[in-house]
Image 1 (tube, one colour):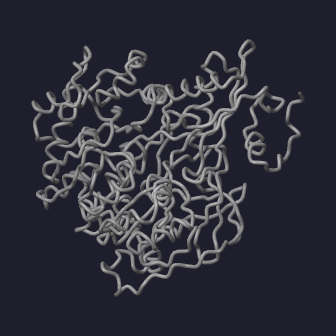
Image 2 (tube, rainbow, N blue to C red):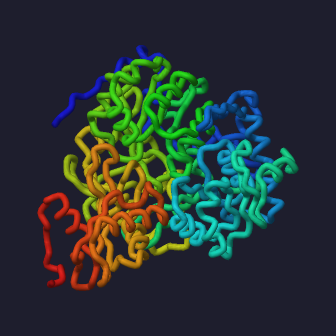
Length: 583
């Protein structure tokens, strides 16, 4: 179905004139080096993301609120840029006292509490590499990431420490565990050797000279899932701050007096790039809401804090749609002037629903991924929306659709979505995996793994993934990681995992397992396997469905054919089966 274009008003009719109002002209004249002059930098020509996001604004408007925090229990706290500067300095001093040096990895495993944001920027000030972890992870994903990165310090809350306590002894590189007991929520005593965040911060100095870092020094490491093997650590540099600032202005249209809310978990790249760096490099106040999803609670947050710019995910939007149009009518959403979405393709119905129900605000989709580090393609506030389209490339970045040889194809043709390397927030490496990193580039392009097409006006349209990676509620799940956990169950002989279409989450994880001899395919065993997987992986990653089969389709070389599993599940043509092993 073709959806009508959503026309935007003239520039003079916007309540706040968009930052980006001359797209073609800016693309022609734009220079990253010119924009770089807006950042302070460090003495000697260096650059540090924490300075640009926190200290730069603390020096100019230190009393401005950086964070409005609301806890799951209704607690409320505010932090100014000056307070954030002092707190992040204290945490940097804590790390220095533990012997942390430039380039060391420090990982964070917490929910949305203020201490997470303090720790994140304190790590960067200390010159270390910050590794945020999704708070819903189970023990196995945490162990894999800490082990691969060689993390020396883990910052964690008591509840999550309890979840992974049995794996900590398996990590020889991990030297220190810092436990954050937010507002004394936990009454459990510290484990032997653990460090109390509160006690360490109380004795740390609020003065700290940022460790000299260059724009190419590593700053953040996010693990991303692939079709094969364990997740890979995509590492970004401090220069990413430049693109976070720019896209915060262009795509999110952040202005100095905005109240901004990003709903992404800080364990994912959206939660760091656009839940920390983009708003604060632009000196914008933002809301952090610790509570989980509930439609009425989310609308209440917008009303209570006067949110003006809202960045959320398609799955969340579809859940809001499912909750009904009458709920938002009970709240004052009149402060909203710009709404955006990211994480997975945004279906046209959701774009139109926003215009109808959310203060006449259609949701603006945009595209990027962990490896790109920041938005590369967007629908902009001034620009007409073509529902279903990702939009057009940001200034300073060249994107294209290419064939299997890396050659550009004509408008309208499907191919691989590719980006010309050199954008500021581009990942600089897969941690200790140069071969995998090199494989992502072809004929002068970074090949994203997404299939898409471009129309004659330069709008890009998502088609699908080129591999087996599953996008469930905006989280990319590698089938190999799930399969590896399943076959650890004593009854499971083999496992194959696919993404099954879902009206809310886009895809859910479905597993097909075959059993060892002596085990019967009962409902009780299926539920046991599902619970086993959730304990190891977390409910967000573990299979939503498990089907027990006699055998799995494999190639003659023994590789499980996930493509065939998916085709049979969805009733699609099976395609070439010439490599399928004979029964």
